[in-house]
Image 1 (cartoon, one colour):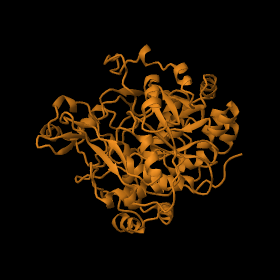
Image 2: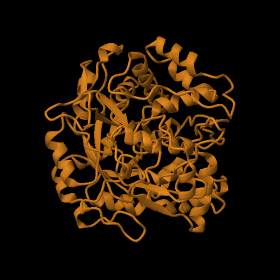
Image 3: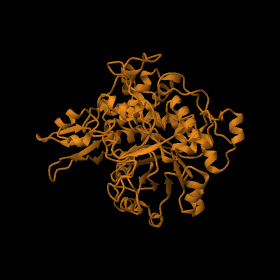
Length: 512
């Protein structure tokens, strides 16, 4: 039985880092090595339209769009957003309407198209495994994003940053063409009143039956895993057990709001996951957060896990979507030992702790953050609330303070809140240009184990491939081969420019 499970599930899951860091190039490279490559579905619709406005270098999106079953959506996207040769660098990106509880079918289909293209490209030309990661907290785009991924044949769906209780059943229903619903969290909702997000595949009928992808819940406690195993709306196929050292959003500590001398949340015994209770569920699980080493993989297997989920090492590989200059600087600073990652308890509008890399000229620095004009024009982390007239409104504690207060929010909720949406887009080279000519500055998130990238990179910030990461984790990495190849040419190719510039060619064959 153990041997069968080992063959069915990959030992390495590449983390689904958003926005756009875990893009199709990275996921495809990992999948070609018989591991689970994961694309980020967070804000994928805006990533998609900005790539089109940057000229769709290499024609990859247009190639994927040829396989999309709804030609009207393709034609509309190209007419609205595609700029042959790319927009002028100082020209603002054209946006898309922010998500609401109810959107028109054309906006819904744009999300389906963007999600489809990302998964289709990641799966192109091979039979390896590809998953999509979404944040439970980013509720409103999730159903059409999942449907687009399913149209492209996604193998796994991974979701955390909340309680994804309704997702397994939604996958079940969409696979057979039935309407799917998710509960919409609404602040100040009237007692006894519930609100839902509804998606009907009949509005975008699949040309054939869809496969229901396996669902992995990302959890930070055995209690949540046990609850999901019993009470989720459908079958949870497995769990990713994520510790507080992982990048991005972390679960709040269960012991309360105590902060250390650096102003970070303090985690304690109550936050330790009881792996014995996880094993008793009888479902495959992976360990994540601080597991990015051969020893981490070996220890995870010794605990009964199928393997590990690793994000940070992949985030700074050649294939990831981070801006190339940021990757090089981070890799160099890892060798110098000057990197600092802080768990910021208030940066994220979600209220979840959020890992931030301290770096000059980014939103991690207080003067830079305070100099930015607060604006909310992407809206993925907006919260729905019920207005006095009974209608649903939307607000974000990172938007202008006066606007947030006008919508019924409290001023103290806005203190220290950062616009993750715009900061994360800037980190992949898609920073918006404002009317005064200023460009949005990046916000970089990473796990605490960021210094471990020095095992793969050179002292001057030389690059390394995602295949190097896999070899390192599996214990087959040869540093001599890496240095002889100038940072390992396998799967690397040319420098990527997720904003403007050239993109790397496809990785056609896996490394042996």
